[in-house]
Image 1: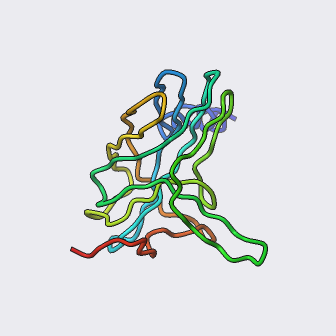
Image 2: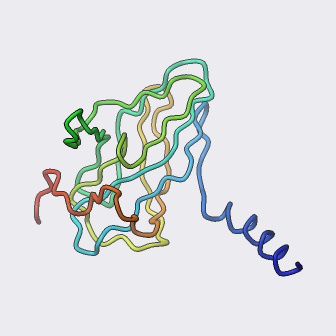
Length: 163
């Protein structure tokens, strides 16, 4: 019984260390992360949750990062025929009082033309640019590689140019 209690207690202590985030004005940004891509990857996807605790719509309109030649907001969709597409979007709206999840199969950050390998456990600085809140500095945590069935952005070229 003592071992079980110790295990449960350790889970509560470890959990918060794995998740990270930032509050900037009316925005709460939770666990910005990138699943570790293959060492030879030219692209990677970035994910997080963004909560707008304010009373007005906020829009994510840009991303800057030193880990890639180009960083953009993207959306993945699957049409009625089961065909998946991914395209750049000019903005991601975060309605007041709501959370928008940037996740596999939906909105996400696309890092194209990676400047080097990304290793599990690393933290990489980036700037999210919002219409109202302006520039918000965050850090993307490199998480373990994705599980099966999830979209692997590391195998996609996304217009990246080879140096």
